[in-house]
Figure 1 (cartoon, rainbow, N blue to C red):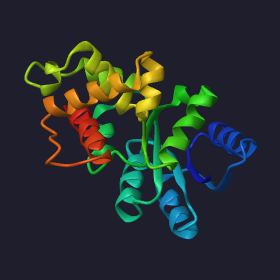
Figure 2: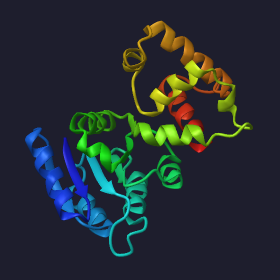
Figure 3: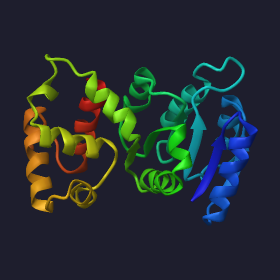
Figure 4: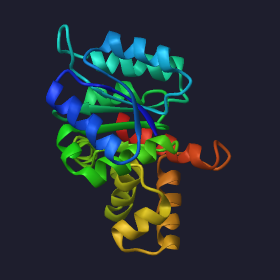
Length: 218
């Protein structure tokens, strides 16, 4: 992958540069603020595959990285975007995922220390999928209300949807939950029906995207 990094912590930024280089990826630029990230993307497009950015960066340390990520998704949707956050921030996740759950990732910074999981998340986003931190998914699940259609799901269906929201394929969901592929497909079809995502409304991967968006926006 050809990656651009945006992180104001020099230590973490240089650590990520070294990690990606050791794994055979090319870091096109490594910058420390949102404006520099946007300039780097424009300078290196269309060669950029994935952008990895912190949410809070200079000058105000609020949502500079997030705003840059949303802008990149608007201007260059072919580029995968992975944002890193110190904490679970539901509103930020919703902003990032409003238009689509394709080529997008939302990870807690602690996940970077789990090198294999971090690299797997980047690969999933690069391949056109999603990578949502399991802790983010767990906390969003806890916050659902009785009026939410997600409350109609069985415990197994909720677990399958949780794995889907993390960005896993059907085969990976089956392996993760120790169930057969047919069982995964059966549960997904039940989820789509209960969330009102009929086959006549949409087909294929887009139903998966809509299910994730319903889940994250609940």
